Length: 120
Image 1 (tube, rainbow, N blue to C red):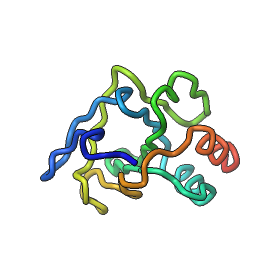
Image 2: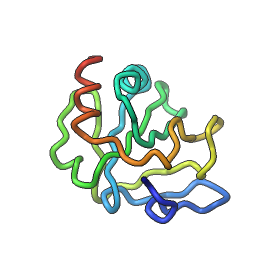
Image 3: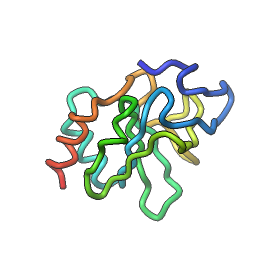
Image 4: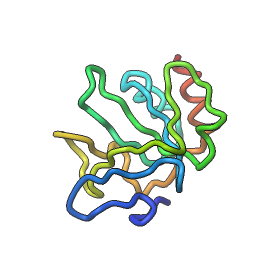
């Protein structure tokens, strides 16, 4: 489970959080990400950035996963990167929001990899 402290959120709004400290992130285009979520029995926290031409989803994965990540059409974010996180209860646009809330914890990297490879 991701705690408020681990996500370094402020109660009232978005927060720029360092990646690679408590967790890593895998960035995936919406089309592939939504199909992958359907294949994961219990997905962990997933944030959405609706701003790009194709919105992207950020899967929160265990620390160290980015170092060995190599799935095409995805980008692993680890140490020395930052991510704008939505406020704790934000579940809809405008702006970044949680598709699956932070209380769901992390998605195991192997489970995410298998789901992404199955839908590609």
